[in-house]
Amino acid sequence: MSGPSTYEPKTAFTRWLDSRLPIVRLGWDSFVDFPTPRNLNYWYTFGGILTVCLMIQIITGIVLAMHYVPHIDYAFASVERIDRDVNFGWLIRSIHAVGASMFFLAVYMHIFRGLYYGSYKAPREILWILGVVIYLLMMAAAFLGYVLPWGQMSFWGAMVITNLFGALPLIGEPLTQWLWGGFSVGNETLNRFFSLHYLIPFLIAGVVGLHIWALHVPGNNNPTGISVKTKADTLPFHPYYTVKDGFAIVVFLIIFAGFVFYAPDVLGHADNYIEADPMVTPAMIVPEWYLLPFYAILRAVPDKLGGVILMFAAIGVLFILPWLDTSKVRSMRYRPMARWFFAFFVVACLGLGWAGAELPDTKVPVLGALGVDFLLMGRVLTVYYFAYFLVIMPLLGFIEKPTARPASIEEAVLNGDKPAKAGPGAAPAAQPAE
Amino acid sequence: MTDEKNPNGGGEATRRDFIHIAAGSMAAIGGAAVLWPFIDQMNPAADTLALGTTDIALGELTEGQEITVMFRSMPHFVRMRSPGEVEAARETAVSSLPDRLARNRNLDESAPATDENRSAMTAAVSEGVEIEDALRQALLVTSASCTHLGCVPTEGAGDYGAWFCPCHGSHYDTSGRIRRGPAPENLPIPPMTFISATTLRLG
Image (tube, rainbow over all chains, first blue to last red; front, side):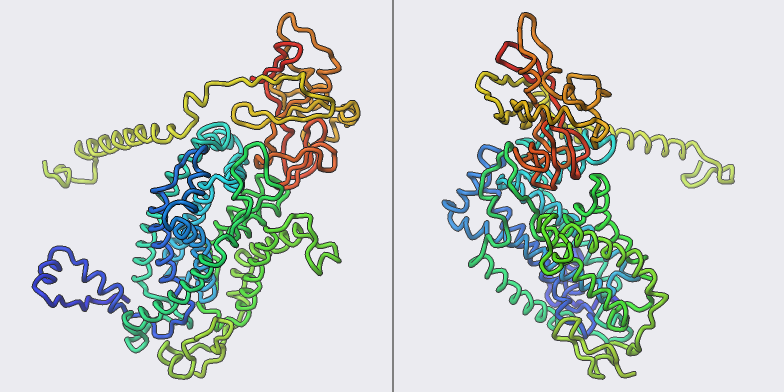
């Protein structure tokens, strides 16, 4: 889709620069004149939003590192000092802490968007895999960062997660000691977690570069899933999508600011305002909300190693999704069965998150009367989670009869298949006129 | 001799190919050798490895009391069990346990998980120290890290009246043995020695 370059340097300096380092040309071709499908809806703005999230985390993180002390005796106090004494420290730390949640919120929207519109299917498999790599790096960065304030949840979260690796046969114990730099989570651990937490965002930035590169080879997918055929199917990225992304970013930042200024701690746990105590585990430890579904999957298995394997498999299965989905149709707009399974999949993910937040023995509201506790709910939803990828996606391509698709993006747009302002659920696109 | 091909024709390996492969292999081995220090630096450092000991003053422990001490940066339970608790632990058949090994550093690895093998009866006694069997039987010292994922179990909770791990619901009995829940092993028992009638040394 990326055709010959249309950039023409206009000044003597840009001509001089272009023949030495064509960086302006690269920016022009990538973000100004880049031909983009004309029917992208707001679900496609999360890529831009995520770029902003990454920049916010890096900038606030660099500032926080100027005041934070990565030592078990001083870490907790230094974070309190940032909140109370450092000029605007309360603001910058809130932005960083809330920013982590907002980053995950946006990435989940981005991932579900990709799942619904079949953005992982050929020729975008590498693009998808790079995205899963970024998601993994994000989880690592979030986990490492959560340890740094050295509160009770920091400490015990670190304890539980590092002990997961202890479940591996033979290498388990040496591996956990290698991660800890000792016989337990301690100062060595905190130190290296700080170092790695600083490193990972830059790795993410690097993979994001590859992600955008891989995006710009086939170009964007779009809500119809139909490939771009002619110039009439596209619009230049600027101003059409710079403005659309810009508007979405502003709306997103308003929600972001709402949390920062009015509820900076609502997404965290009160226990993390108690300094880490290696002698006492809090009565209930749960991860941050964005990791809860995986926590529920971990607990769904009564075996230590089995639970760990299944939890990592839940992310691993995303890597092979492009080859598990056998349908010839990309977008679920035209897949009457797949869209229902997808809707249940979203519900299952939310349900797993809920199950992960509750104690396993607690009865589920309403269903509790039938003896359903959160452990059972987690197990049922875990089965569905894996069945969606390993059974439903492979079989559906053979069973399902897709509905009629428009011949081109241009036709889809002109025949009233309007660029959806709302989500996929509201898209009136199931029966486009031929 | 040209750079590209063996002048004698055919796809035969040349002296140059050999030098390329040999040089490349050496570079790879050298790279791997340099990598090791950067991996190994994350392992426990010499000062961390220097084994510490922890002395516990038993005189202050009353029957039924439990304290938590730090030993090699890990919390450990020290519990002076009541006769009822010892009795309950003794009556449990080893064959009914999820983990039938004592997991006691003072004993052989294959020792069965009887209460006798878990209690301070297995601790060494320094020369000249006299200590009552009743005290040694009542005293239980175990790691306080749940063998599931390392949380510290809560005292006096769970189905067996001893410890319950709040993280993922493992129940331990009054001998520190896993009875129910996801934890795979009994709480391990550290090496210990009575260095006086009222002092137990861990390590």
